[in-house]
Amino acid sequence: MTCDLLVTSAHLFSMDDERRVYPDGALAIDGGRIVAVGPRRLIEPRFAPRRTLDARGGVVHPGFVETHVHVMNTARGAASDTLPLGPGMSLNRRWWSVVEDDDEHVATLLTAAEMLVNGTTCFMEAGTVHAPDAAAEAMQALGIRGLLGDPFLWDRGEETPGEENQRAPRSLERSLERLGGQLSRNDDPDALVRGYVAVFGYGTASDELLHAAKAVADRAGVVLTQHQSFGPPDIAADAHLRGQRPLLHLEQAGLLGPNCTFSHMNLLHAEEQDAVARSGMAVAWCPSCALSWGTGAAATGTHAELHRRGVPVGLASDGATSSCRYDIGLQGLLALLSTRERSGDRTALGAADVLELATRGGARAAGLDAEIGTLEAGKRADLVIRRPDLPETHPAGDPLQALVYAAGAKSVDTVLVDGRVVVADGRITGVDSERLFGLADRSAARMRERLGYPSPRQWPEIR
Ligand SMILES: [Zn+2]
Image 1: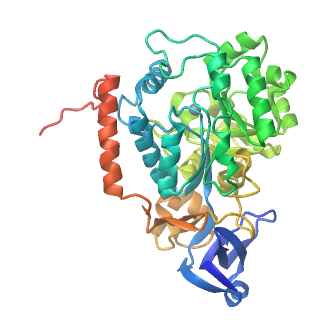
Image 2: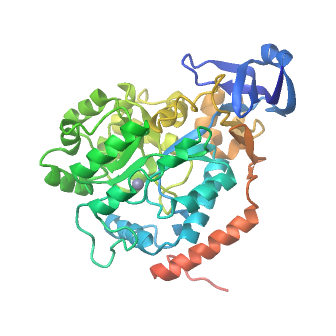
Image 3: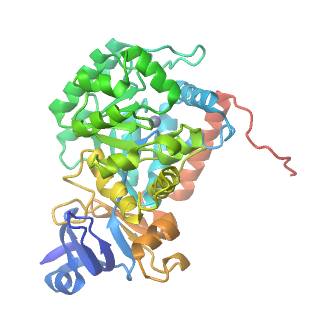
């Protein structure tokens, strides 16, 4: 049988329902989909591939899925990394007020590049890009899969004076007008960039807006996302607006369901955890963000418990500015370590859970588990081939532990999305890297000027 590509000599983690591993595995790809996977001795004789990729014994696994992202990495270094929560969120608001379409295009190029070289093949944008078309174009150029939401669906709560979002004022009318605007991307079943429904959240949506958003998501068969229960201040404000703990209100209002994926969910009461488990909804766990901002999740978060209860949990960075990296492997390791520290229980999460959350969990949270998240015949060929020749990949006692604890993102060698090579030898293939870095640096300089923050460089620089 002919096929486009045969990946051979892979230590292959299928992440299928039985979690089958093929220590000397092979995988055949045709038309962007996996057509066969299994031991090399059984797969190789069956296929006459147009191209072969020798994994040289390296780990191969499904591409990681990042479940909550703001495309803002060109804000990296724009301000001090020790801004407290209030001024830190203020930087975000100011960013969203002054960012222009070109900047969002460049930030998405850089985002896609960073994610791909870290082994992430799909991401859920959080609905905070003013120009989704500019972002989609960048995603297609780099060849990354992703979901885009309509920009800033929100209609309640106070704007901070001087930081009003000029491009997207809070309004029910404006939000309803935009709602569902990204869904036409899904008319093409093979679209790399798809649409879903993203409400901003944190109590900035009326029930009327949330009901409308949920109905649109239900009808279109897509995920509804929003920020929820980040830290004590927003939870208190949300509870005040709703008259009770937010997740309990949302459940009673019929606003939770299997197609909901809320981000953060850091501090949930026991009854809220039950409501989440009952609803079938998914959670986007943002460990580095929670740790960096001191939300208290490392002390009282319950993501690992939700995962153990069968709640679908994915991992996310929430963005890659001063506190986070677009590196789901790192997010997984931080999730694991913070959970062990909080629970005092070393059995709470292990390396297998990290790969589980990063692949299957993310795919389910994105509502794309029928298409991605495992390496099985019929699924899209989104996968990562790791280098076997690093100090951290030896000895080969347990390649899974080596991957999660030791090698991390530096072992990413080749990345495929829809069977196309989007990273080769650790470098993106879609856009010239030097050109991209130049664009990103110039956009960041423009943004720094508009934002007017003092340079965060602390030490005397001698030139
Ligand atoms: Zn966010």
